[in-house]
View 1 (tube, rainbow, N blue to C red):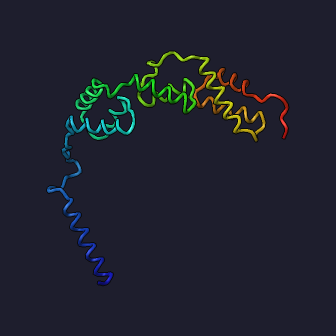
View 2: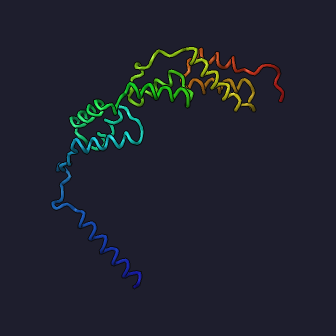
View 3: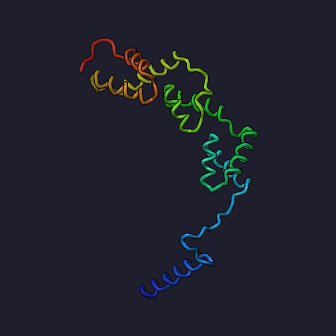
Length: 190
């Protein structure tokens, strides 16, 4: 079989596939194509699959269902049912996520609040933060980060460290104290 024959066969196949995929009546540009409605059980399955991948807030699940073209009434019904079953609990998710962000990502309270809001959770459900605990986390994070900046002069290291701590969500006075407490003591030799 020559290349020309192969190309002709592929062209015929492409035409057949395109013809098969065309709707019975070609829709005009202004025509409204009916969208197949997603029933409640299908929407619940979509939400449960999303929850199986990771814990999600009610707002995140609502966005997931909205992207799948689920009607607003069905979304509300499914989310209410999941909340009644205890599968969606924004307050508990906020507490768990806040603890994880503080420990693993070394975030300050401002950073924790910003991340919670980004995920559609209310930071007000958290207990009032312990300022001493936040200061100790900032000192620990600054000490760990400062050890990695050993080759920099003190002024540059402190400037970079201050910016890094502020981006992590620590307040100005906390940053200042953390930098002072992690400042190297004694002479430094180069």
